[in-house]
Image (cartoon, rainbow, N blue to C red; front, top):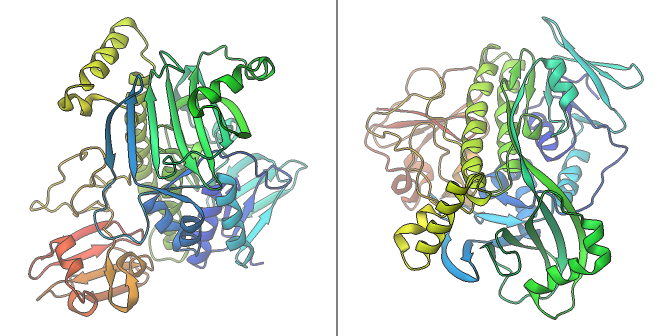
Length: 499
């Protein structure tokens, strides 16, 4: 293999995605993991969002992951057994992917491993426990247990939630807090008709009074059930006493089932203060931890990977200066803060920290039983969505398309600078985003002329709307005007609109 340009620390989905995207740009990487091999146990991160599937399709994995997963489009919320509301997730365009598919993290990793095995620019090394990381003006030196050192120009650290030693070595803080209540996960295999295409969230059900239960469908007649449980919950004791069986049967009734996997965990809300430290970028759970209500963990980590990969490729290929990497921190740290705000608000509603907040929660839920206007106040988790880079130095605002802020739950903002461009079918049996990830894209509307040179070097594609928009769907979705040129970044976010 060619000498690596980038060391990627951590061979989970975020590290895998980073290495695959770097290879797509022609950048060799070495992928390190402390474990001796892959450990395909448990469902872990199961909800893969539409735009993440789109990123994975750029490396040949998205369609396969979507095909194997269980599609769901509806989120239902209940209070004390009565349905409060449900909503379907919207698409700003006509994506080939559903809003979410549920598939175990282990299976996602296997599919990404197959893509990595076919990629000569990626060198995977198991049993490489990283003990140190140092950098100078020309590169990064990563030291592994036993004293071996690996040299590269840059490093991306995706070492997961337990990357304390590496965070300390880089001098970053990991501020935030942990919640006292714990959560019990059981993956069960059972026949539950009518539950296979929706997420179900229960506030205060009679079979978990005062707390919550979340139910997700998974492939193979498997269902993931999360119970909120007290901080002193003892899984071993409940299993041996038969109370765990009673807990499951309270939900599914007297029917056969099998527990495939279970675990107990505590939620955290934390983020590093810096996601770029010189030549080192932090990504995924190593950079930010959020509660899983809304599926914002792995999905935001994949967005980290894409943002890091194209910017490293541009710097390594000489198409941009190293200051481009600072925008990685600016954009993805802002995304992490957004996720913390959203998920912390959810946890404050799910696990009130004082009597006043508890009374507020009960009042909202009770009111919502008969008053649809209260539904927006019920916080069962705002589902994962792309972050909008409206304040990035790489974004040029358009005063005629101002960003209106966070849209209602389940909706997406209208297309404009900073927003991920909606995906729609175009000529040749393709989708628009498949044209937008090979460099900067200039999409020229009626009467438009190419603007000045792009902000960076590297590949640039000029496309006239009339040549790809056979049925006018793209023009309608974007609301393209006369003489406009839309500049799309290599990660398919809209950078600017010139007229």
